[in-house]
Each structure stands twice: as structure tokens, then as C-alpha cells.
Amino acid sequence: MLVPGRVQEVDVLRGVALLGILLVNAQVIAGPRVGAGGVPVVSAVDEVAGWLVTALVAAKFYPLFAFLFGYSFTLQRAAAARAGVPFAPRHLRRLLCLLALGLAHGVLLFAGDILTVYAVLSLVLFAFRDVAPRAVVRTAACLVVGCAVCLLAWGLLTVRYAEPVGAREVAVWAQERVSVYRGGPGDIVGANARALRDGLGWNLVYALDVLAALLAGLAAGRAGLLTAPGRHRARLRRVVALGLPVGLAGGLVMAVCRNGPLDRRWYDVGSAVGVLTAPALTAAYVCGLLLVLDTGAGRRFAAVLAPAGRLALTHYLSQSLVLALVFTGYGLAWYGRAGTAALLAGCLVLYGVQVAVSGWVTRRFRYGPAEWVLRAATVGRGRGSAAG
Image 1 (cartoon, one colour):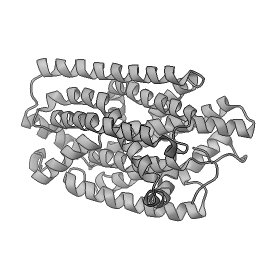
Image 2 (cartoon, helix red, strand yellow):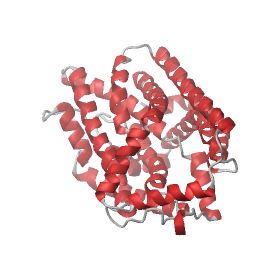
Image 3 (tube, rainbow, N blue to C red):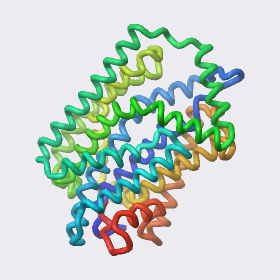
Image 4 (cartoon, rainbow, N blue to C red):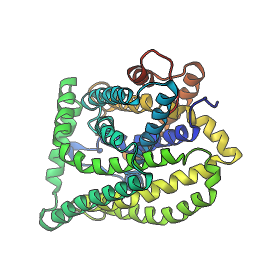
């Protein structure tokens, strides 16, 4: 069902990004499978599954979410103009609400929360709102290169001077994680709070990459690139043809560095390659999907997936809630008990349920719970647009 004031392509892309985010975040929340004494247990199937997720999914979908957030910024601004209200107060209220949701999410459920980063970087996005799109894109490219250079420099120093991590150190680390995340709510909250504090430096580095994606979305939104993409078929095909080989090659290098056969000292070198090449694969995914959506089968696919994108914030938060109830001391405490392949299969089931529930919800309600809270904080009780 088409919703007036919304760009369906944005909703479909959000719906697709939800799956990619889930496949990556679930591995962090569930933890590595461990045996007696914290010794990692990795089957050949799990090893292949983890390797493929790193090569094809990791670092490919959080930029897509950020891109769509930046794109929606332009839709929100247009909605404020149509309503005849100042945009700046709306935007400030929106980012403060996102910040509150993100802090609660990060401390209670998942320390890898991205909403707080979006909230802070939204101030920069606002500052760029009237900058020429080409200048915005050039700035985004410089930010990507800057992030990659920082990661590469640190990674090369690590390879040169750090000692390989031994099996005993890995076992001790894993056992500590198991003890904490199978513990009580206080243990979990404390661990998440420490992870947020300890990861602040890395978040500042990766914020360059996130900001680049936000700015790219801002430029795309001002150009209306996702409106009637059928007009750009030739350009979309070129992006797919160029982006796939570059992105897949980068994903291959990233997986080799992060998942082996190279040892963990190469992790940040692989991350640097991923930051540089992931945008190419993400763009190829997006453009390929837009081409598919321009077909009869694609339009039917869009009708199924768009409702999930409309409830993206609710689903993002509920994914963490479900995973926390299954894998931490909040519920079943299965942390460290699931292999990667089984975990990914469970993620597909959870995602399928979310897609099915989305159709039911959006036929009855205009907003999901989290979307309603965010909209109420943004525009108050007055009537507003559904855009973005």
C-alpha cells in the first residue's frame, strides 16, 4: 500500500538494511561459541558463515542506514516547510529524542548502538543543509579517506609491533564475557556502559565514515535521486557494473584480515580496506535493488518489504531486545552457546516475523511505537507529514 507523502524506495531500502544490521549485530550480542574454560568452538560451517557475513554484509549496511537517515533529513525539512513551521526546532527535538533512545538502547541492550551517533552528527548535517551537493559529496569522500587512513595507520602499527593473541588470552577474554552476559541485569548494564566508554575513541574514528554516509544521503535527497529511479536505469546499471567488483574485492580482503587466514593483528587493516570499498558494494546493492523494484515482481516485493522499512526504528530496537532476552541474563542467558550458522538462521526467522508483523501493523496504524515517540517529540500533537 502506497502511503501519501512517503518515498517507497526509502522504506524498501530501510527494510533491506534491517536484515544486514541484524546479521552483524546478532553475532556481537550472542557472542562467540565457547566450550569448557572459554575455549572457542568453531565448526567449518560456522567459519564459512562468519567469513561470508564479513565479506558481503559487515560494514555494508550501517552506511546504508546512515545514507537513508541523511536522505530523510531532506524529507523532514520539506515536511516542515509544507506545515509552515520552522525546521530547526523540529530537528533539534528529533535528535534529542534519538539521543535519549540511543543511550537507553546502548546501556540496556547493545553497546554498539548507532542512534546516539546519528543524533550527534545530525548537528553537522544541519550545518550542511544548504551547501551545494557537489561540495557535500566531496566532503563525504574526504571523510571516508580520512577514516580509512586512521584505521590503516593503526592497523599497520599493530601488525608491526603487537604480538599475536594466544589461545589462553582468548579463552580468558571469552570466559569473562560469558560470566558477565549470563549474569544479572546489573552485570549487563555495567558491561554495556564500560563498552560505551572504552569504545569512544573508535566511535570517533568511525564517526567520520558515518558522517560521510549521512552527507551522501543529504546530497542524494536534495537531488531527489530515489524519486522515480526508473529515469536513471543506465546510470544504475553502471554503478552495479563498477561497484560489484570493487566492493567484492574489498570484502574479500576484509574477511581475510578479520576472519582468517591472517591473524587478529590484521583486523584494522581489513577494516581500512572495508571503509574504502564498502561504499562501492553498498551502492551496487542499492542500485541493483532499485532496478529490480522497477519490474512487476519488484513492485510486489516492495509492497511486502516497505512496511518493515516504515517501522525501521521499532524493528532495530526490538531486534536488540529479542536477542538480549535470548542470549543474556535478561532471559535465557544463551550467550556463547550458539554457532554462527545457527545464529544466522535464527536471524532470518526473526526478520521474517518482523516483515510479517509490519504488514499487519501498518494496515492498522500509521506509526510503530518507536516511530510514534519520535514523531511526537519532533512535531508534537499537531498534524504532520509521513515523509521519511
